[in-house]
Length: 304
Length: 274
Image (cartoon, rainbow over all chains, first blue to last red; front, side, top):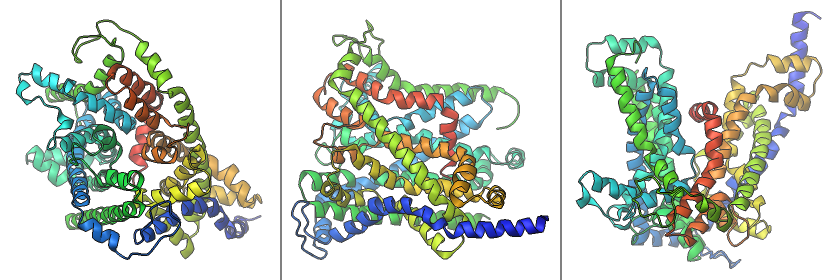
């Protein structure tokens, strides 16, 4: 067979086999539709009913659940806490992650060991890190003892037990756990920057911060986009760390959308209201992640 | 960044080591506290006056951690095997067929990356109840296979798109049908990304808390995070025992992480590109 004939033959064989290839989608599509697509559509519909989870009868009540939500100070409270957490960790976690990445990307001898250690908290069960920090931030915890040891004993307090401190403690826990995650993504990007670009950044006469900003930062656009998306979405959905450290308290000072949703649906039995909160959460995720994506895409176009 | 090891590099090295020590300090306290006797009067910053293993014994038996570890491992392994088979199969038409339906299907899967699972959680809870799956680990396996499908398909499809088609063409000259072409020729070529899919999904599934809290509540079955939650509720003031329990629960995943650290870190870093 000539090579032309065999190529034609191969293409014909490929075409024949590809005609049936759609069958390969079926198992994945079936599970995906059952677990994600159909329940999400159902959920969006149930948000307009008075379903309580037990009664098979669901009455259509229009936007009553959403009207209740916007006039419910507890719900608005939960939304604002969720936004505070999402914005805080997006800024702090990525700033810390970037500094760590720049540090371990330098020619220091310990860089491989440090990278492995700094990423370790990100693989630990969030429930476990929540309990660890609950102890560390407790009245007799290590945090207060360190404060005492360095002469700041007057600052000691039950950090998670105070209304205006608890939410920042939760941000601290999340940043501690996931800064290494941001670092790893920045690092992969930094390692892909060509030597010429880095040399250019060193030859250029400007100061180090200015050089970083004008030469390195545009190169980091892909990792910045991914990191911001991950931390915004992760922050908006946050549940575990809050549930095990404060349960939404003290008072309602750390109630987030996920803890509020859980309480309403599974403790108070108001499934439809819980789903309405989930719908608002979905819309927030779409707006914030889509918005930041569009913003960064526009900025990157401006740079080039 | 490039160049020789200068005095500035040495200074940076010291700073970075100090930062890492501060980062690791909570885990140091975790280990120290778990080895302390209940009547140890020292502050939590001090080493144990006397080392003991008794906290681990109490945590293991009272926390039912053995059973929970088996459940977590079963759920993770079953889910990951199904995810690998289903998502690699689906990635083939999504990556190789350029017709409109293939693009629509791929896009539909990718929407799942953004959708918060809280939305589907409650209606699915009722469906699982109606099917009698609530309280069994099967509810979790089905849930995770569906939930992690978009991410797994995304990883496989991106990898396949970058893979040349020569192997498939050579195999179809030899008259291989689609099924054997996929499993005998393509699937072995996907091994690097299969490793990434397995690792990232095991970590996510092992650590998940809200889903098993809901879907297993009231049954005797527990996964590790839920067992910890129930256990800490009982031993709330006995931190030595609680910390021993935390160490037992995170040990399998940490050991796996340190053993496979290069692959894990590369997976987390590269899998999210695109």
